[in-house]
Length: 193
Image 1 (cartoon, rainbow, N blue to C red):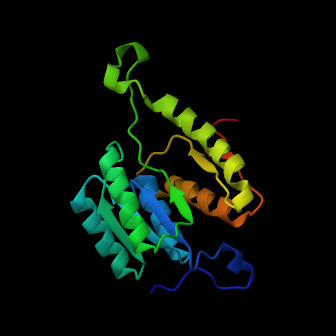
Image 2 (tube, rainbow, N blue to C red):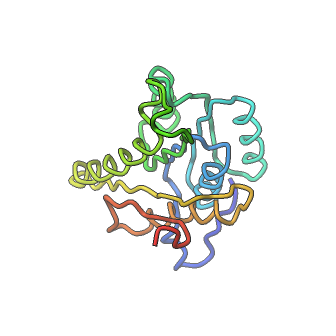
């Protein structure tokens, strides 16, 4: 097991020891950075991606760093594959999932009028739906002491790892603040201001 970034008593509030996390689209860009951030702070992480070669490459990298990361193939657009993913994660984590990062997405750069019937759950609409869904979950699950928040990263040039890391650190900050729930936190360097 890798030594975490936690060095002082004050830093212990950031600890994710004993926590479990699922990160969709965890092999690239923001998802990859979030996995590293969660694992560095002690979480056991499971990732999914459509590409098994990408998963295996990442798992080898994380294993060499001592991170507790597992992975499986899943195209989140497939109902059956999502069902299998949840069964796998439930088995691996013995029914306990603390953190879910719905990172996988496929942006559409088409004009609305150019979308086919298959495209109608289009990118912008689904992002708006995720925001409202987050608020609904927060209200419904508050009684069970479960918080639901979303991180909304601004435009990210993925070759600039610093921007990607800012988005993953936003996820960790939300976890450390126990009174934040039902929020969509913009981590965009002030872009939306």
